[in-house]
Length: 80
Image 1 (cartoon, rainbow, N blue to C red):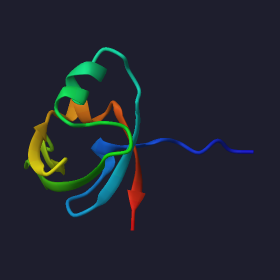
Image 2: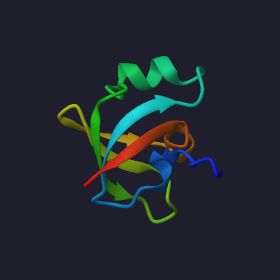
Image 3: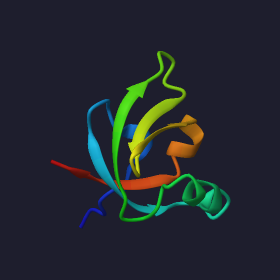
């Protein structure tokens, strides 16, 4: 049986909505939580820079820019 791969925030496209499930590293956990990126929080990818870094997301009622290396630590589930 194949194990399903986690979907990362860094893999989403502009306009996609998702819910934060967990973080894959403890190193960035506190920083992301202070910015409103909490497990269970709904987010939407607003814009991705031409070189894919940074990305702009809507979270907790405001727009936040994340570096791609930060977005790679956020596991999400898409929302239809």
